[in-house]
Image 1: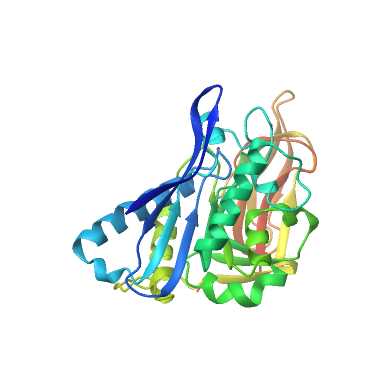
Image 2: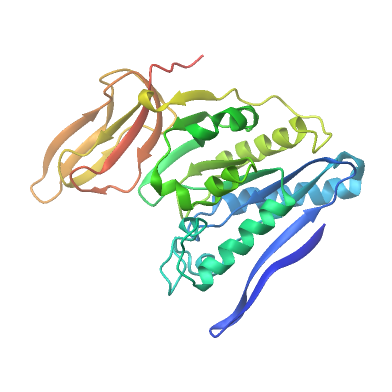
Length: 316
């Protein structure tokens, strides 16, 4: 493994701002695959997955170096300032780094680092995987989200990743400044994997995605290894996704777990008023299908998302 500092900027507050890239060299001209974690400093699942990848590949370099056919790059912590503070946004600038990759950005240290990262990924990758977790409110089942404009190129790759579902959703202006959008726009296929919830690590989900990443590396010819079979993901279109929202402000008490296959009318939980001691609303599923997003943070306001369900999917 070779380690390179693609960015090192002095900071007046202590250690320099640095982005590290670990590279496992290729034995042939197979695809170069890059893994990125930590764009948001409160999302830790990707760091755990990168940790497992680094350990696995280090051991493979010793035991079977010929198995590494294509170059593998791992960027395990690309927003160190936010990670050190466990915050989604870059401290002091209060910038979401994953909204600084598009054109027309105002000059800042955060924007400079994002552009350096983007150029390095474009110059050293044929495939990029960008790991994310959900926000503080919602728990997500392991999934890949693909913008409809890019589905033709990305779907064959996404199906190898051992996630529970692949969500094809329409393009929107908000995506134009993200890392994955700008890589895909530049003809570098980039998948966004989302799982879990911020500030926490769920090893079972992380291990599932880690196995998916090994499978992806194997299927692209980047690694020559033997693997167990992986999940066949559910392909989801936006019109299949049903959102459940809070009818009132209050506390949401969940009564199911994410990943459950629900029947229409099945109870998800209840919305309570802790001041008056009353139940404001019994929350039930509007359809039969897979529960892939569930509210974890109990405090809600009117309109807050409580759940997302993929309509009509049933367990095989």
